[in-house]
Amino acid sequence: MAEPQRKYISHIQYLEAEEYAEYKSEYYHGELFAMTGASFHHNVIATNITAELHSLLRDSDCFVFGSDMKVQIEEALHYTYPDVSIVCGDTAFAENRNDTVTNPLVIIEILSASTGDYDRGGKFRAYRSIASLKEYILADQYSCHIEYFFKNEKGQWVLDEFDSIDDVLTIRSVRVQLPLKSVYHRVEFR
Image (tube, rainbow, N blue to C red):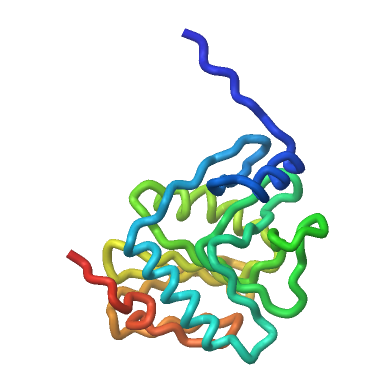
């Protein structure tokens, strides 16, 4: 049996369609990948992180974006919707749009069973190609655990892990401390 033909669209068609779409899709080299809905814990953790970072950075030159702001990874080839992203200084938008940034300093993803391997692997590999990116943070939604990747002074990515509710993660590039108590506030693990 023959494989079904894949339908490729241009990035312009994708960006225009996303403005009116009923659901979000990520774009990779002409293909669309529909995003599934997020769980209760995923939403609580993402909201906790966004709220905490917004409060900590509100008087700075940084903006904290939730999952509706797209990030352009490769011009005209790859667009994603991180759960949380931070841009500092001038916000650079893709192709004169106001819904797609090109210069995130920090990207945060909430891990799920269906996306965890991709978030740690292919997606992280793609994100590392963004020149402005200094930190990549993965928050587990099933246990108190954060994987914190940062680019050191040699340009190498280093991993630090946090797994105690009493731990405090320092996000170096924006000089703020993110307590895991805040990240996991009102999240009950079974």
